Amino acid sequence: MNGRRTQVAKYVIADVLGSAAAWTLFFAYRKLYLDPIKAGYEVPLTWDGNYFKGLVLVPLFWFGLYTLVGGYSEVYRRFRTKELGQTLLVSLFGVLVIFFVLLLDDEVPSTKYHYRSFIALFILQFGITFPLRFLITSATVRKVHDRRIGFNTILVGGNEQALAIYHEIEGMKKSPGNRFIGFVNVNGGDQLLATVGQPRLGKWHELRQIIITHSVEEVIIAVDSGEHEHMSRIMNELEGSGVRIKVIPDMYDILSGSVKMTSIFGTPLIAVNPEIMPAWQFSLKRMTDVTVSTIALIILSPLFLVLGLLVKWSSKGPVFFQQERIGWHGRPFWIIKFRSMVCGAESNGPQLSSASDPRITPIGRWMRRTRMDELPQFWNVLKGEMSLVGPRPERQFFIDAITEMAPHYRHLHKVRPGITSWGQVKFGYAENVEQMIRRLEV
Image (cartoon, rainbow, N blue to C red; front, side, top):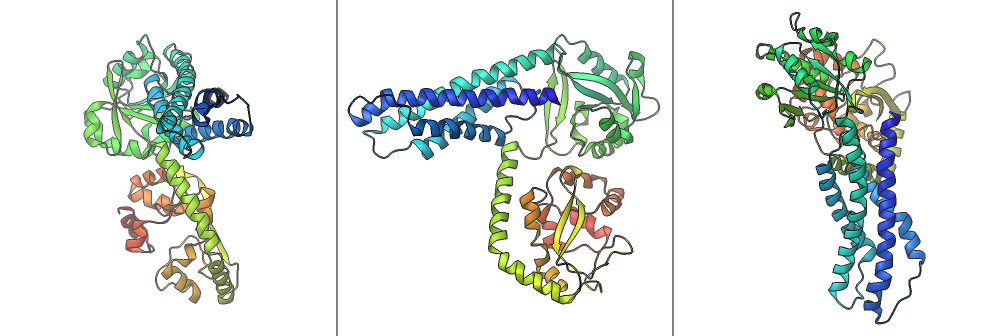
């Protein structure tokens, strides 16, 4: 963990110092070469307040932009061509923002002034930050190839295919980063990897605990064609574990979701992408959630006061109701609602409500029909526990019941739960597990 933090710090320091140097050189260029064109006379180079303001704000802007696009994520798995493409696009977008926010000036002799400003800042920003990032990434790639950096990897399956993949990866002169720590068998006979010293860590249904116990970062699935019926179960078991998943190509027809082909120096594998959106889309969605929920909490505050008084008047007990739900990546959180039931409504254990549920108060019935009881969840959205739109979060008790009948329910934890979802709009509140599953299917 400390090594990863150090690696992230290297990129952050490179971006901050690089952008500060680029801003300094651009400021000098503008004062010495561009401002004389604008003013019609020589302009002395003075480091004024605008320079020092930019020296603070501009590096912070670049740091925030790289954070939004995932420039500091998976720092040990970055490669040089990706670094080139990402830095080029980030530099272009960032310079456009800085140009229109800080540099655009109507009082210029010609449009050439603007073109020169934009091109100069882009060349300086990209020309300084990319070499720094390239050097850091290149040094990391060399360490991965030399096996000084590796990712704990397990093989699912111990058959001939698993053994062949193991030998091929281990025999490579330049390592792809896989550090094999053992294998997980699917049936009692697939244990060939034990003959080459790889320990059997357990069976496929124990994968989640094995991943935690051995700090596994990557799983390569290699099962025989006759064992494909296990694939969906294995994938469901791996859901939410955070590991990278790769499978042999002949299983492509049984996989769903976002996949891409990858090759380990001649060994073709299918990489299953665990993320449903790139980092910048997640960041944009999160910014939208924060903006809308902040505005909603401010504008709806008078309504909150009225509803709170109505809840207090309707029955004894607190205004708000809190309950533990399971959210993003399986993390528990406390959801908050206006109380719509009498106190002690679940004294006999977890229960789902129905349209004629006697536990619902008169005001609560109206709030549930109009969804007014859900409004306090804007606070959960603001805290990052929920989103505006997403699958409704459930309690662990009902999640266990759902996964018994629909194991793929775990895939919903890839996204933040939402205040509303299409399933809830279409079907409303679920009264039993079967309705929960039906709501899940939309």
